[in-house]
Amino acid sequence: MSGGVDSSASAVILRRKGHEVEVLSLRLFESRGRRSPVSCCSLIALNDAMRAAETAGIPHRILDARDLFVRTVVEPFAKAYVKGLTPNPCVLCNRYVKFPLLVKEARKNGFSHISTGHYSIIDRSGARALLKKGIDPVKDQSYFLYPIGQDTLDMSIFPLGAYTKEDIREIARNSGLDVFNRPESQEICFVENDDYAATVRSLFPDAVRPGAIIGPEGKKLGEHPGTINFTIGQRRGLGVSWPHPLYVTRIDTTTNEVFVGTREETMRKAFYVSDLVWLDNRHVANGPFRAGVKVRSTMAGQPAEVKPLDRHRVSVEFDNPEFAPAPGQSAVFYDNDIVIGGGTIEA
Image (cartoon, rainbow, N blue to C red; front, side, top):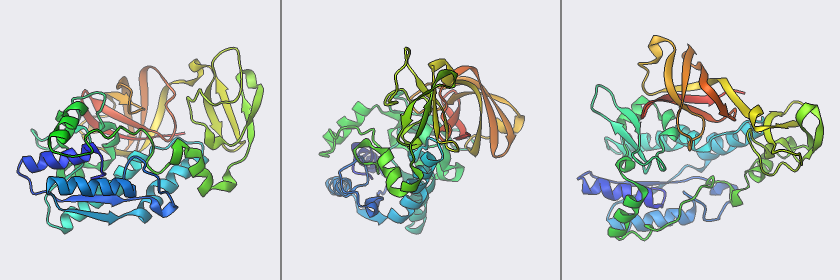
């Protein structure tokens, strides 16, 4: 339980369904001196979780995971930006911190299942559990869950997948939870003031150097303060002018240059994906397969052909070019609303 309305309501729903429930909160990032009340797992959020569990009459404890979180999420996040990539910290956290620790603690304490406040559905009607999109397309979080793996999926329960956010707020309100109206947060939990570049600079100050911004036809348009300030597809904050809107099309950390161009130049039809995790590998055994592919959590899956090259790498070719698939981000493959698997977009 993070202290927000979603995880708090999840615990209440599970208790109502007759499960024996214990709440575990993870303390993740104050080891870097961060004290602000950001989105989840700060000290303030942990206190909210404690109060919510007390209100619901559910045992609660806190597990200190700060060192693991910094090592497997914060530092790889910063290193990715230094390399010109666009990392996905929520995917890293689910893969290396949150779910592994939940599974470990559940087994150690004699619990058969784990649960979180993610808006997704697990279909257990067949021979194996399948991860599916939640019914609310605005809140569906299946994109972030592909890396947990089949064994963890088998142990998981996601109570919120069959609800909308408004439903969950109402459940929390009716349960007397004072977090029922807590606002949504779109920030990265360990980044202060929504300034991810400051986080990168604090860890790798020597890697941040000014360089050139290169525009159409190879023309130098200006200087940048460091490549870490840019991501593929970025339009705002470029610090250069041009008769037409410009977007970041490429980041070259070898020459320390940022390349910008038209929106059309950001469009890509084909790319490679590696570091794969498969949840429904029936498609993989038969060679290339059709899928809806998401390269951002908020987009609709776009029709594409996915061609396995080996167990750990595939090529993806969209039917139509897609805007700015960013190296370092996740590409997730869907069979309608079923998550087949996913991986990291290669540079």
